[in-house]
Image (cartoon, rainbow, N blue to C red):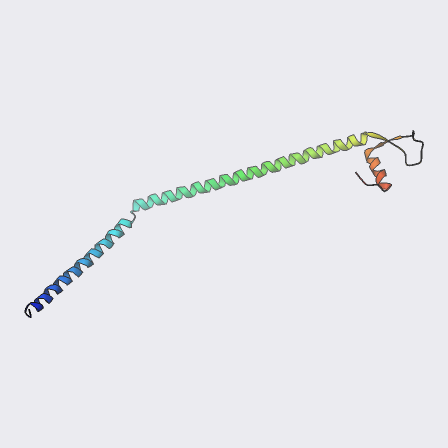
Length: 137
């Protein structure tokens, strides 16, 4: 057995060295394989760049269309508001003219017989009520 032990150690040392060398080779080969597998080719890189550029252009176009739609909606609201204000401005003088032309019989401020009445416009009547201390309409 003493003769066999040194040869066993030498044989196992060679075997362990071969296993370690094989493991180093295997680890290096697998690392290269994974690196090549994950690496992108120049063609694939160009395709990805073109795809990213197209997506960015589509997004920019969608944003500009959305902004244009918002602007058009704001302009429509402003136009409706202006039209409403113009209609109100046109209607107000007509109502004022109608109220000035419309005469309402009213008892004079002086003490007068009940049958004596005079024609007074609505605006004049409101002014008299306010002057006499009454509230406005």
